[in-house]
Image (tube, rainbow over all chains, first blue to last red; front, side, top):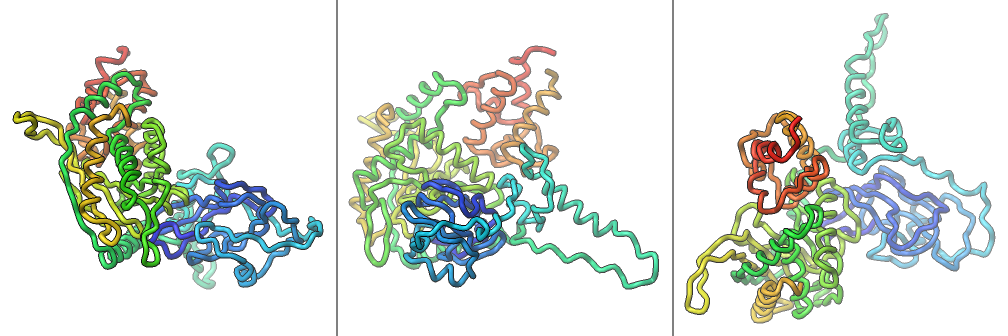
Length: 417
Length: 83
């Protein structure tokens, strides 16, 4: 069970998308896990063949637990026997902190016997939203008939099943003879109801933010940035584009932050074991608020190397999946710096709380028209407040200030972003 | 399309973007952003959905005229073929 963020302690396997014997390659999505914050698709970090599923669907296990065994290239399959869980866990030869899977033990060179293979787990074909809802409502998906494409179980199917279960209880025929009173069917045990999920999410946010404020000596900087050029360029650009190709100004901000972070490496990386580990890659976490409350900050990878169009496509995809409640493991675990933009809610500035183990959080407020003095003249300009909350163990105000002025400079030449 | 048809279409697309919103909770005269917490990405997705459903391309400069449900209906009414 990978740690999908500093605040995660355990996760529940909702569904396995592979079975023993399936070949997998790096990046494949092999399982769906439910955490306090979201439903997360677990990506595999190695090429190989699934040897055994260790943790069954529906089970909640702590971070670090071996979920499955994978046979990597070059090794020959061993006769697959379902192993008792503790043995399988012990056999996790080397712990892979970022990976959900432990490498399978080296195997004796004999051919696997088909008969010895464990039966493939029963597959449930359901949309992630439906799966999550099933968990919330305590519906057993294996008993639900899907009406979606290829018989997939949809949200509506789950709703129907939940309703039917309820009505089934109410509509139970009264006993005709004075025998024992009808026994209520066993109450379904939802992994987490909506209200419970709210509480759980608040708890993980509380833990991460309290840890941040306890451990990280934050310092805060802010500067106003003239957005005239950036907005004029964006408007002209969007006028040329079909609605599906249009850019949001947030994309310019994300790219400028990534390029500036490349020049000021002290704000991009992690504080681990008492030392700063700068990150070569710049994965920008984007704080996205959830409609039901709470927030999550999944990463857009390698923002500095991507075009504005690519970043826009990534951002749209990410927002849509956050709203649908489905994210991928790598997006949750590996942001190297986070950007929050509270402008939509109408505030002018936001001084954020750093998400550990990251060392900086960049904030943007809303764009407002303000009197702006330049060259001895006062004019009216669209202005945005950019802020930096950074870890004083790693950087000082001087470097942080340089970072913000680089963001400013980059936004004055939007065509080069 | 009639006004009611346009309204139904816009509501259907809003429901896809914000499934938790009950259509009868929306006051057609009020700003959608404030009322049901739509952000700029949601507005863009709404513009894309309307384009796909009706063929009407809404320039960015006209987004403010689409701020409320009534605004959407009024804006689309003059741009859609009369039924």
